Image (cartoon, rainbow, N blue to C red; front, side, top):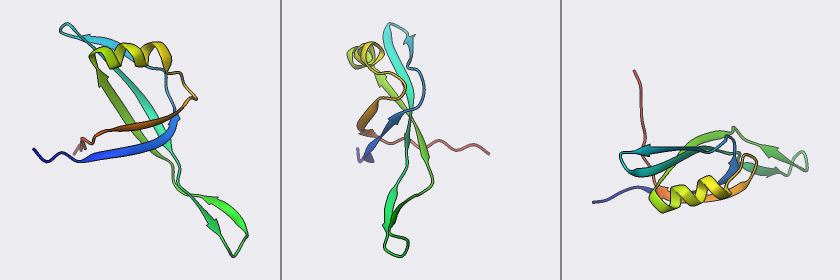
Length: 87
């Protein structure tokens, strides 16, 4: 299988939600990341558009995340990217 993996560095923007899927714990939360670049013209940092991601983790990692991650925490998330679209 050729999964797309990404690393996202950002800030936790929601409370962690912990639920059970069958017998497996599942935690999810939102991460916001805002790209920045330095403008030589204005001599200052300029923020780009904020992008939001929903992160979902399973089993032991879900339990750990639910205990230790809080809204406002800085995080680095590495994992498989699933893109959902609605029409």
